[in-house]
Length: 315
Ligand SMILES: [Zn+2]
Image 1 (spheres, rainbow, N blue to C red):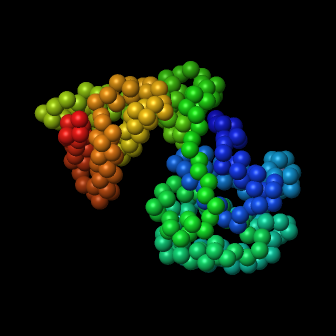
Image 2 (cartoon, protein in one colour):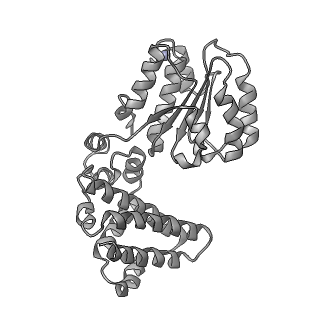
Image 3 (cartoon, rainbow, N blue to C red):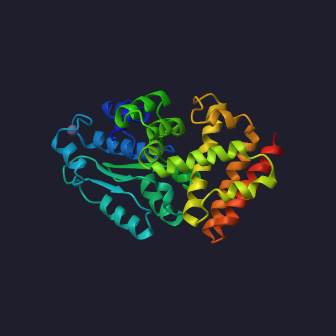
């Protein structure tokens, strides 16, 4: 499925292309956003724009080499960088460009890298050698030091318009149940849409969670509700992911950013903004409990009782 067509006219890329055209490329860019799929695609396009003689044609030797992952002056980093990785990167920065153009370093999720390695990187981002370009993707801004962020030109990716994403999904996967769910729950987030469209079980679990959030009335009913769900660690982790998505979709619906399909509009009525905020906090707390090996069934109870409590406290 190729949803990247939705991204070719997105704002961050336009700004970057303009900078390149006008010879005003900054030495470091930070692209902020939540949609990992979209950001990875955009960062690759930005790298292509930087090394292509005509700003990212997709056909020339430089573009083809980059697409094939063999451009000698462009390096991609998908994982967390440790201090040793950063040292290697910095050594590489100091070398001459093979093709005579820019040397580009793309870190897809800089927020995965811990502070010591970030600090190591900082000095070079502050005073980079001539002809070096850093492209950073940042999903969790708080996980990147303020100084490092402030040394980059900031670009913000805010998502695809939901109606365009819906159309693309229908075109790509036909009008089946999964693509309908994907469109309803994705809220303009391509990574999320792909997850729903390609994973039928995930989509079915989402229906269960939404039904449950809608029907949950009294704490005495929670054990029976919980009993209908599968309570191993993997499933509870999925339920947490789904609950987070559902909360996000309710908030987007309240702010009139989505149409509230898939039952979202119905359940959003019984959650105030304050309740949504507290539920989000609760999901994070439950995730920590699950990771520290609390019994999955106990984590699920904490989640459901917690949501019920918050829902009524913040009415
Ligand atoms: Zn090209």
